Amino acid sequence: MTSISRKIGILGAGKIGVAIHDALAEMEGVELVYMLAGRRKPEGVPEALILTEMAEALSCEVDLVIEAAVPEVIHTHGAALLANSDLCAFSCTALSRPETEHAVRAACAAAGTRFFVPHGAVMALDGLADGRDVIERVTITTVKSGPSLGLAEDAAGPLFEGTAREACLQFPRNVNVHAAIALAGIGFDRTQSRVVAEPGKATMEHLIHVEGQGLEWDIRVSSQSLGGVSGAYTPRSAVGSVRRLLGGSGLSIA
Image (cartoon, rainbow, N blue to C red; front, side, top):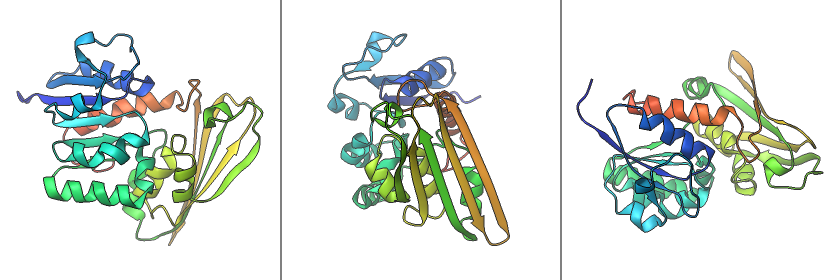
């Protein structure tokens, strides 16, 4: 077991951020430096760890920042964070903006840091990454209730159909799965997205279809809604992604 402690900062104090905090608090070889919570008062997080201003977080010396907040954090501060540490961003829809993706890649190249894309609420990203040279078509359909999409309870039917880039720009907090699929596979502009609202739906569903040279597969993920934009599986997958990162596997897709 290594004696070197990894210093970690967490941006965001919602369900995902708190789940990651709780998991890391039990791990050896990890030093939690801060959680940027803004106005939130996350239960179970020591007061000494909580920061309220982004400037405070940027001044802290850490090895890895875990973002579980909103895409605007990556748009505004992604490059600055990467200048001093690795960054694992759950708001990966942010990279649908070309200027943000360019800034992130440039910052990584300049500082020798890494930007990790967690798999979030979906799985099999390794298959997409491995097969991207022969994959010809990827479609993903997300079905959620109106409130889970930031809409009224009675929202119903197809809300969007187009490229994953357009979906991410239109629903930046709701389709991080689409961004992860696009980044692992054939890109934002070739991946096709659909977003559907279903009144009263208690689960969040993601249906992925992949076709290519000599291959075809379907993935269906269904997760109980936690009352916001996240499903019950997402915090568990987030914890798993962070554990793999700290295990030193070296994979870009976490």
